[in-house]
Length: 317
Image (cartoon, rainbow, N blue to C red; front, side, top):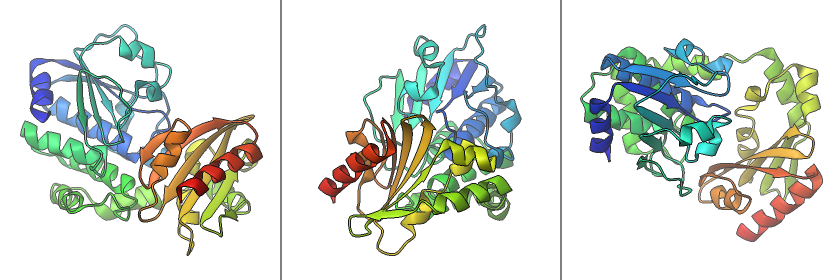
């Protein structure tokens, strides 16, 4: 599959790169690493995301080139869809993107059956960033410090700081290669994990007050209502990482974060330990992800949603 992507890149001149809404470090790091790779090959490149870049990732080299208005008039030879298994997750531009030619998907999430012109998919990869590193090696690109920094950030964030079960020996080897090319682990980690706004900490304090347990304390849940965001001045992006906290409690196998998007509309993020597969649970409700990290959305009252989710989890564990 890599040789097909390399051939597509070599044969074409103009490229559009995009990813999913609710951007994370893997999506942004992968996009910007690919941007720098293509520019180094003297290609014309645009990076489009519907959502704004979260503050914690603005340090990534090249982040200022990202546009948030879909380039209507522009035409592209190829489109890269990164870290996104379905076009619908791109947002409002998904229909327009679907009509474009030469769509190349690079993703490590469990497949959902979306059809692309080229589909480079590896559910065993730690991150899309790890897959982009492989692409760079196949293309024979000499990694710059900017490329290495973006790829390292992508891998770091999607492995939870190299703590998740998706961290394999190849992941660590690649991270070491990126450090050798100029990625600074301390500087990147400080920007990602130690640069939080006060509003986020205030929101976390309120969120921890909602902590509750089910199924003999094997499941821990927290909920964030819109009113909590409003009262603290926090943004939706500031909830990143909250779902990991209940999982750190001894005896907890699954942690759930319920985020109210609008009245009777919630996003649920799930995390699990060891061999507890939350992707199967998310799939029941139309979502997906990875065995230890998954998400989906549900409509209804919080109490009814939680009751349905806990019932489903009980059937699985």
